[in-house]
Image 1: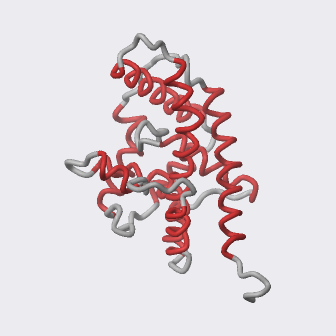
Image 2: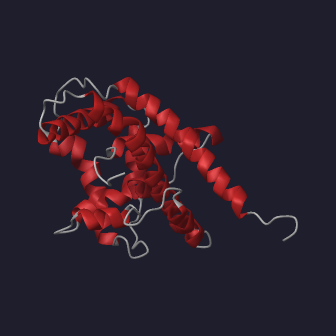
Length: 225
């Protein structure tokens, strides 16, 4: 993974909502904010690739995402709001990993190779921006998510992001679709609605499996108990 071209906020929020459906619950405001928080690095003046890799825990090789697991463990004894934020944050990172493998790589293999690198990146951003707007227009849970997201209180997060940066990204997300009106108004060809909904289902299943494995691995063995 290169730490860029990751899914837009609505995809992360959709994953958050779907993850809670088996428990017939809804993600907390803090979980929702955590699930979009890593991209708050865009709100840091003068930020670059190194900062983006850092907040996504990608500045060093970690194929099994052990640092994300350690982040969850670090917050395991914190207050509820901080624990929920950390869970959402880690789910964002795991979603990014899967998006790179199952959406980005196939996309760049399928687009016409005669296009320049810049043209291919521009097409990617147009399609993913449009799909994020499509999700926003169609999601039955949008109003509840927006209310929860607006109610969340940003926090300083383990030296990765400040509460101010997260708050700016929170505000930008809340106004992006209705006030800034940046919809490309295109029909995606490569990353279709079906691709995105299939991805969301796969992400929910894979993240649940990963979190369960981490939880079981942290339990003491009979010898240790």
